Image 1 (tube, rainbow, N blue to C red):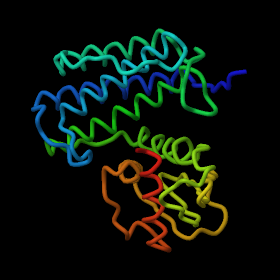
Image 2 (image 1 turned 180 degrees about the horizontal axis):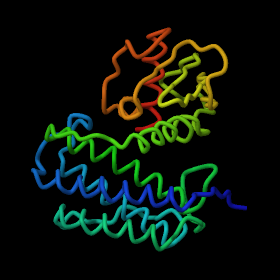
Image 3 (image 1 turned 90 degrees about the horizontal axis):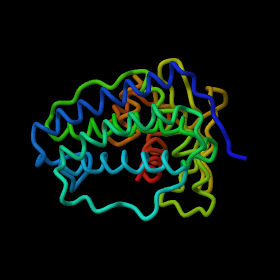
Image 4 (image 1 turned 120 degrees about the vertical axis):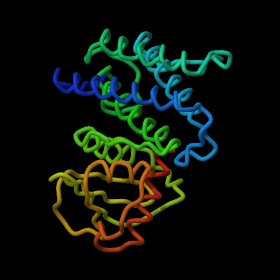
Length: 252
């Protein structure tokens, strides 16, 4: 039986609004110049970012349509104009999500949620990160919605880091430590070793280090799009740096 998650209508509407706003901003920044280099993605230009996001949208549209992981992928779209392709894809992903609703059974990479609700959240967060990438390329960074950023912290820690990805112990960063992340009155306690990353909501128990700050700042730091003032951490600085390297490993 497929695992199902419940997404309230107001939360679905929030994700769609963030997706629409951030995808529109990404299009706007793209029109400032496609050749600008993106410092957060070495080797990429703003054009690379727009093409990547367009392909991500098209992939999820097909997954929502078919219910399975699209194979083979990607299609050859090299001849398409980048801005035109991106504009088409950003409109189409909103339509696809609205059409699917939040309870449609479909492929996702989540162990716990195999419904279209998963893609509401994931596409909003994918878009805001790459909007930041393009803005960094032109040095025109704008704020990240605080509520979305806080949700993004949870996604990075619970889904990306805390998934069943480490059982073989094939990490390059076998940090053995307990780290706590605290922002906007919420905390996540992460117990790490070479073969697991166990994420527990809350602030109970001893930790080797704690990182705290505004949600957008912590969110961008986790994604490698911003630096952390080490005055915003307490405890073992080496453990914090090793934790961040482990996060980067699971996001690549």
